[in-house]
Length: 217
Image (tube, rainbow, N blue to C red):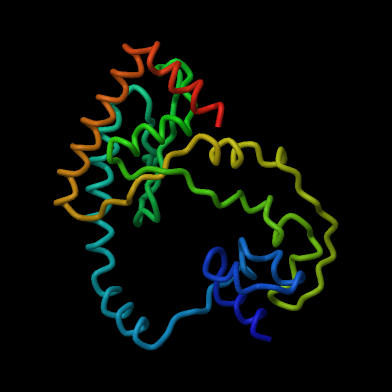
């Protein structure tokens, strides 16, 4: 009962080390597709925050649009695009695409390591595409959270959703800056990215040595 309650309320690192039973442990990446963990104080805070939601989203969009505009000045990072026919309510996260072509094909993981050494908060999300997780990869699991029968017969493979797998391998995850004051940090990030790009482009011998050493680990 305890372990089933855990996977109704959350997933990932919050529950992984508490799940012991095989029938539940296999869902540690997704839970049962739900997240029932709010408590009364959180509800009160959420109600107050929701009154300012539109204004908060608008400010966040303005700041991250500024980030996107500045990233267009780089040689290696393609910002996310909001299509003209859509209206963005807000950003859950900020995840542009890495383009290695102007950086001599430098591996994205090494690019991230170099940026991190320069003080930039950047990483890749490790959450796999949903079709590769236990909850969704096999149709026998589809009805587990609702106790309904599932009459499908589906088993997904990694190449069934190529774009999802490609995005997982090629995206960068930056902080979702939300305050106008964050523009100062964004400007510092852009200056640092330019610096790293210049080193990679102009100091190819040094980068090759770093890359060889990095790949040997």
